[in-house]
Amino acid sequence: MTQVPDCLQIDPASRMVSLDARDPAFYGDPNRVYAALHAHCPTFYWKEQKQWFFCGYDHVNALLRDRRFGRQVLHIASREELGMAEPQAHTAHFDLAERHSLLEIEPPEHTRLRTLVNRAFVSRHVEKMSGEIKMLANHLIDGFEKDGKTELLSSFADIIPVTMIARMIGIPDAMGPQLLRWSHDYVGMYMFKRSRADEDAADRSAKAFADYVKTVIAERRAAPRDDLLSHMIHTEHKGQFLTEDELVSTTVVLLNAGHEATVHQIGNSVRVILESGLDPQALFADPGRTERAVEESLRICAPVHIFQRYALEDVEVDGVRLKRGDKVSLILAAANLDPQKFSEPLTFKPSRDEGANLSFGAGIHFCIGAPLARLELNIVLPLLFRRLPGLRMAAQPKVKDVYHFHGLERLDLAW
Image (tube, rainbow, N blue to C red):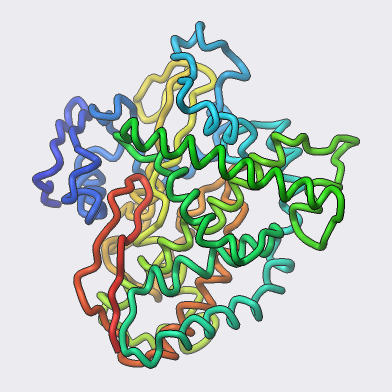
């Protein structure tokens, strides 16, 4: 029987679970906890979060696509009807930036925004960026190769995804460090047990981020370029153009989602490959093997763990009765470890062929940036191991306290 970690308390009969999301024993190695949950109750009520959670692959996959659930609920019921608290004044700028986020809206608004943006992210367009990604990755490695050591996140992983998504949108490379600072503050709002200080920082950065984006929008209105922002400004869908607020929300979410998860995944993937003891030269011997290794790293150490949805009507799932307005959480990373779906789920096996991971979600909110993230990983991981033979970890990796994201604080490497 799978051992239950000390940080986890499970009552299988009631499916009640107690777990501190800020406990390093959990966020430092969440896969051990997920394995125990699969063994005892893959559908459970998390007492500290006051919410039902689903871990099973089939349930998560189905709930991501189930139109009885949505990312928002106020389009079908009022706050008063649902007993939902009013928005807080100190997060007004964050809430405004989120109001038209692709991640948060439902059709028909979602369909209109996604249609306008989707064209830029289809694989055939994204693949044109291969040369730029290789050039940037090689340039960064040139900067530290002779040192025989580096802290990979700050010297490499942080830089590539933010630079590429910024270029795609039409933001200057020089803004990269500032975009990272805003984004780190912004995603603090998604952390479990966030503090008032986290909320204040997110709101300040949301305002500064939005104000900056508005200046770029004004520039592109006056002088369009061949970039995504100009495309969003000047293209109509069924006779409608995006409003200023929609443009700001969409740009902010693309910049955040377009790099935050990939930064984590580069670090996570390098770590899991090094810990596996497998030969990187064999893992990345050809494009097919590289793709399988990338997908397996996405499965076993996904960068985004939770995706939440509201019940839009009274519904029952796996014996759990939900009322309209109830919020549920789907643990994407745990679904990827379901022993009913994946054999030896805690083992890194790049040769496995057991179906798709759910790291990018599914349904209408499937990650729009997935083709770009996959391209970046398929290019930079083989390049890193090829350029730095003998790559090894110089210290125990430090995991960030940012659940429900999963990534490293630092990854010290030597060769």
